[in-house]
Amino acid sequence: MKKKKILLFGCNPLVNEVAGQLSKGECDITIVSHDEDCVKRLDAKNITFKDVDYTDDEQLRSLGIGADVSIVFSFFEEDAKNVYLIISAKDIEPNVLIITLSQSLDSSDKLRAAGADKVIDPYEISGRKIFNMIKKPLISETIEHVVFGQSSINLAEIEIKENSFLDGQKLSEAQLSLNYNLILLGVVDRELSNEFIFRLSDIDHQLDPSDLLVVIGASDEIERLKKDISYQKV
Image 1: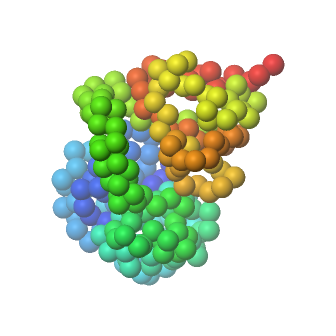
Image 2: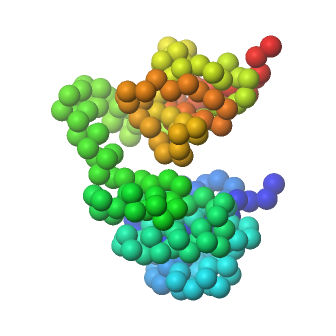
C-alpha cells in the first residue's frame, strides 16, 4: 500500500509532537522549515527535512502539492504565514487537506476563510477545559488520570460506515459508554462542516456515512467498535 504523503510546515514543539506520532504509522513525512535542527531533535528516522520558500509556488509544487501530497499541517507561529501558505496550497491543489493552528483569539475565522479544512483553536479547547474543571472537577480529574495515566487508553476518530448499526442513529442513541465503555467526546458532522463538534453542544446530531466519532477509551474497546461498525445491517 502506498504511503500517505504528509507535509508539516514550521519548527516548534507541536510540529515535533505531530511528526513523532505520525512516524509510527504508514506515512511519508516531511518537515518544511529553515531550521534543520527541528528534525535532529526528533527521535524518528523515517522523517525527511526540506528547506524551501513557502511563498514560492514552484517550490511548493516541488514538495508534491498538486501531485501526491494528501495532507498539509500549517503550524507556523505567525497567523499571517499560515494564511499565506493555506491560500497558496489551495490554489495549487483545492482538494489537499490542510490542518492549521489558531495563534490568536480572532484568527480562526481568517484561517477558515483562507481555506483551512480543520482549525485547532487552543483558546476554545482551554476554555472548555477550564469550564469542566470548575463545573465538573471530578469528571475532569478522572479523564486526566485515565488519559495520561494509562498507555492503553487512546483517543480515536471512527468513521461511520454506510448501513452500519450506527448509520442513521442520533448521538444520544449511540450509548457508547454502556455498550463499549468509551467516552464520546464529539462528532464531525459532514453535512455541516469538517469541524469537530463537542458532544455537549445543543444539537443531537444524526450520524450519517462518513461522519466521524471522536472517542476516548481502551484500545481493545476502540477496535471492537471499529469491527462492529464494519458490519452492515441485514
